[in-house]
Image (cartoon, rainbow, N blue to C red; front, side):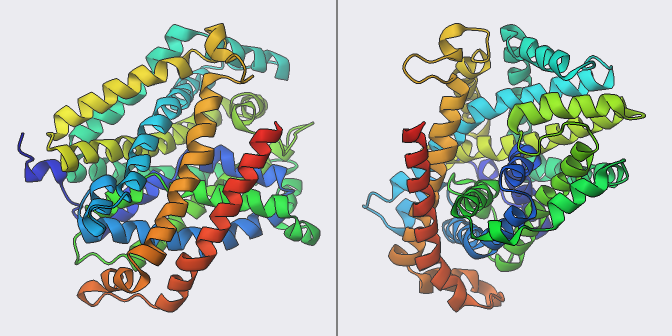
Length: 458
């Protein structure tokens, strides 16, 4: 089957790439993962360490992945084969492709919940005491057919966008979604900081406890959150970088991606903490679904016009989720197009079908089916198990391998030649080279070791 040029595609502009790549990075992890880690890390001290990790560790890997993609103009698997043929480095790309399918299979379930909560909050269905709201959420996620249906809606919507191609599908949608997402964030943050009690939340978020800056557990959490926030190690940035032309510079575009992604995370904190501290008994360390689907709806219920405020928040979450599901699906789709000559339509249909099948256990693992809700011998749900396998292990391993590959196998001078192609400016190349060769691999290896020890201990 011949591969048509239109099946691979290219970005129409550098701004199209920036918005799409930022959309890939921006997701549910920014909106609830970042505030959760800030709460557990003691507030502003975590924010300071997070920003340092983004600049010194994650940004260099982001640049490296984009450079690999643009140099080869191929999917993650084929990219490593092109740069180092007849070696096993292609397995690094394959890990990213598998991670795209694995993460999308459970991420689409959670994204489906956000869609439902747009309706539930707008209509006032989520009301009452904390226990009542928690019971409502428990009943909702244990409804297997409803959870499966919402998951399918997310996957079908994502597939329709991906079938449209790079420029007409991904770029066109993210050009609309990303500005809307940022606009909604600013409006919600402006509303949150005017709430009674918001001052305490702002102080918690912006005044660091200096002693926590030297807490290794906080540093490890900040490094992990920064790494995952930018979608590193799963081939997304290699794939998106492959759609760049050599006239579209990498350095400036990567800076914009980092700035947009970090801004979304920071703005989410300006919503969560001022709003949360206005609520009696708020625990800044609560996180995940408990924070988003039970604590915040209770807050919305107490505000004038809170139903609309809540609906807007879940619209925001839905848009953030969709920009991420697009990149998650595009990674394996690009591999079938580049590596196996499939048409885009057939590749999208095949991967979407596979992902939907793999999503069934996750959709049924929150009370609908006992086996999937409590896996024998593991003591966790299938969804939690998938999150650990892919988010906590596959992604950092992928990022570690990318750093080693660019820093020591492809080599920094070759990467810098790509980054400076067509006369593009890339200052501080020596600093970037040192970071990608030494700092990034050591830091990510520490994440993997810490995560392994924590998992074994639990």
